[in-house]
Length: 204
Length: 200
Image (cartoon, rainbow over all chains, first blue to last red; front, side):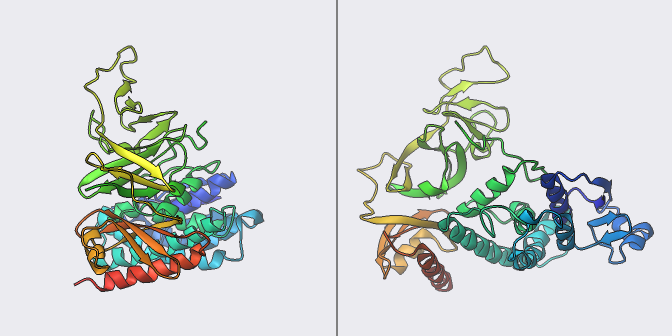
């Protein structure tokens, strides 16, 4: 399986992280998204006419939507799926359009109404925090239950990277504990801006 | 200023450090492996890195930058680059009074007068950022200057206010034991909307 990848992209990281925690190897092809705009090159447009990243290629199959990729990677791993995943994949897409856009504005100079992007990002974070707090009241730590699914993997990157877009996460305790649980998963990998746990997951 | 709530016990597991603040004072709140909670200045005396980015090992807090390790009283106990050196007493992190009562973590920037506020029979529900100053929220409830508001409501809610900036604070909410915490959560979110919409 080949992932056409850009290291700073939250959506590409979703796929790298998913594959890593599943223990599935990916061949990474680095695409110079910024500043060279290689994702719009003739070669990449032939693969993906939409000109977006990530692109996942498995023999003849080419996927260009990160939600489809998460579903594809977990097709044989039902423990990573829940009936509630679809609503959270849609929510994750909204995170990309708010927090993700604010981050691209701040780190790569994207055009954006930055105040509006941050404000809708905060609204989304509040919704996520409220839901995860309810989950904790029910004694579970992930979006759809006691174990993580593609819903968590989809929502994690843009949430954890929110500070890159000028949105602080300090006052969201349930988000912090949820992100910590994800960073504690066996096989977890980092990306720039999201580091592994330095503290011990289970201090003596 | 007296005892200020800076977090809830349920949100700070063993061996974890989190960032917090009281107005302009940035704090690293951390819980040692043996369960003690402490409130320190959030700067490593070495290079100024935020200690809340660091990590807890046993009963010490380590800076993420160069691994300088601070023992429970804030003094530097170990410098990895100079393993044979006993660090001088002058290398220490400013520490603040910190207490944990009734599931609430309290800190005081000046020597506190007495015990933290009595929460009576309530228990903590959740902490929530609000885009209003603590002062404005206290005024909204006709309790100017207060940082512990007993609101009442069906859930017998109390709010411990953590002043952050002129535009933000964190509200630590408690409610009657036995109250449905999800229902309290929805009530708090509606209150937050009212508070934020009442901004001038």
